Structure formats: C-alpha cells, structure tokens
Length: 225
Image (tube, rainbow, N blue to C red; front, side, top):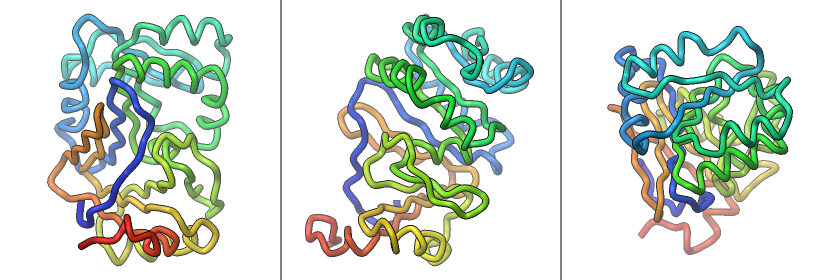
C-alpha cells in the first residue's frame, strides 16, 4: 500500500480477496486465491440467475479449483443456501452481477452463511463492482452512496483506481458525509487479500492506494510518522 493505515476487518480463519482483474488475462489473481484454499473443500459460485457462472467456474477449475456449483441466491431458500455453504472452501461472487441486486440477495441468510464459512477458513473471492460491497459503503454507477456489508470497517473500495490524486478526487464526495472513511484504490490487475491474524497481502504489479477522510486524519493513531 502507498500509505500506512490500520485496517480492521471481521476476524476469521479465512481469506477475503477483492480483485480488479481487468489487466490480468492470465488469471494470476484467481490462481493466487486458489493457493489459499484448503484441500478437499468445495467451490460455490453465487449468482443471480441460472444462466450465469459457467465461464467463471470453468476458468477456476482450469486453474485447479474443485468442481464448482452454482447457487442462485435469488431463488434458493435460506436452508438450502446455508447447507450448501456450510463446508465450502471457496465462495466466488458473480463478477458480472449488478452490485445493487447482489447486495439485496446477500443480505440475510446468505451473508450469514458466507460469514460462517469465512470464519471456518473459506476463501471469499469477489471482483470489481461486487467486491466493493464488502466495505462499509460503496458508490453505485449512478453516483449514489450506499451501505455495504461492512466486512472492512469504515472502508470504501474503489476499483480501477491506482493513482493517489485520482483516488482522493473519487473519495472526496464520500468524505463529505462519512469523514471517517478509509478509501482504498485497487488498480487494474491487482487485488487486496485480507487473511487470519491481521495478514494483509497485495497481489499484482501495482500497489493499492490509500487516502483517509478528515475524521481519520484527525485521529493521531492514524497518522503516519
């Protein structure tokens, strides 16, 4: 990262991997996520309809993932979702899904089941717009600011942004209403990986940029020495 900051995220034995893979044609980010996967554990793909996920699951399987299966988080009942996520080692969100619809589908039983799997060691892997949902807030394509899943405390994730000045400009509207926000810019071809016991890894050739809202800067604990 380009600026030291104390990130806080939900504790667990798993990994949360948030990627922007546009400049990653070789699938290196997905392969790196698979390296965190425990042996003999399943792979669930969370989608919003029955026609999605084939290409992504095939790609992950080519990279060494176990055979994946689709969970339609819109139509499946809560008990089925909870059962299907109970013993998985890898959960991938549909990267082509509309983030607003995905968030609506995740809230409730699916989010709780996903968190439980993460607590027990699963890798949660998301790309692009849907990856932004794991912050405290996220901004839609139309410019609206919305509550996120809150897995990373006070964070807003902005994908496709690596330049520090561009990140500050993109985060400025958020800072006006949420001054304690930590904005994280994840450039194309890179990923932020958060693991057990406070492990933070940055994958890819470009660093992740960080800028703090005024409410964070005013806290001495968040100042760089």
